[in-house]
Image (cartoon, rainbow, N blue to C red; front, side, top):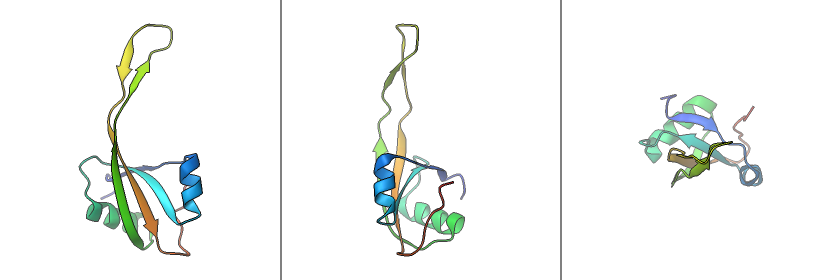
Length: 91
């Protein structure tokens, strides 16, 4: 179960949504919404109200000092809404 959640994403948009009890997570690409819900509830001890997911396409990145480009991998993001009054500790 703990391999489903890779990390909690700390972004500007995520900081704004944390006020609304919503958190960004990087999750395994094959994970489903019920699996993500169960993993978050077990790992962080919170009650999940809603899970939204999106596949994030990896982009091109130029390697410093060369003209070569490298493709970053595609990954999956989950926006998890927890019960009011509960928090996911990011640090």
